Length: 393
Image 1: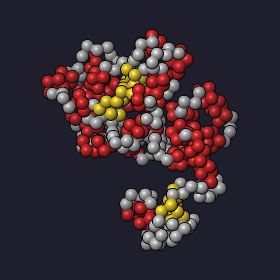
Image 2: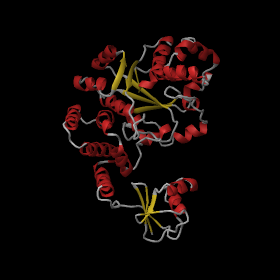
Image 3: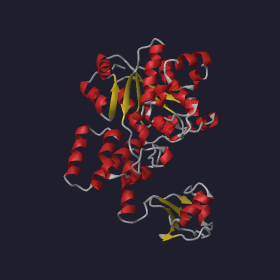
Image 4: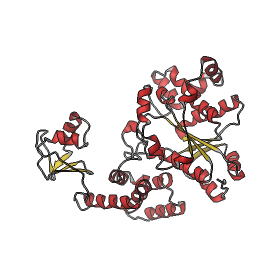
């Protein structure tokens, strides 16, 4: 495939959602040269679900892929067992190999929602990291001082508080950096919280006599509660959330995030995004623009038809106070509400089901359930929260 040097597209790649580039001029010249570049992103399988925070990086890879560059996706099945604490205020627990393997099960399926996976080079970093011995790790570690590591803001804060920082955490940047050596990356994409790890890649590439990769750091985005979108905060919108859930979660985000989401989570032309911003500043109801945003993102992952259905269902539930037109049906008549919630996958355990009931979050035929022992009759509609429905047959 011929490499595109379209100046407008390159300019947007270098600006849209970007916080910092090292080295900007060098990267721009590479992109204009027509040389095919190897563009790297690493994802650790700390959870089985990728979310729209991850999609910021994946969409940027898609931009590079559409210009004809080689995308190198590294799934950190080895680094995932060690744990990166770049954005953490405490030590991240180690995962077992079994846990990381389980978490990676659907990663390709999720990534394929954004990237052309047939044109993507997918690697697992256990392939090279498991082989390293003390001699080579020692040589890599010699490229950094301890002060390089502890000067990082979150590490310094933990040390000042007397919070434990393990030696394992010191090794993580070496591993991520060596990934760049192993795949001979020309560019690495990452969030702003990854700055030290990304720079480690440059330093180790120089140590191994490779040209240092350019670095593109992208902005982190907030989740449904306004904090950084993170599995730890349970505020994510997941790539495989069903259309109704995705649409509903997007409609629940803070109004201040509308334009940020358009810029980072869609590829709606920036001129159109600026027009939406002008409309918001002129006093239009933010909900009107948020409907466009929710439909645009849901359409990207699930197609036009399902996005339209999700929009109709949202309006039925929240504006017309009706149940959606399509509701899952299960033959659970005669069982108590706790069993129905679990078997209907509206709760993962009896304790969660009871908690939902005690909090008033469960209804049967629009009446709040007060007792975990309540029996659910045939043709009843069970509702959990605002968006989840189940018809009992």
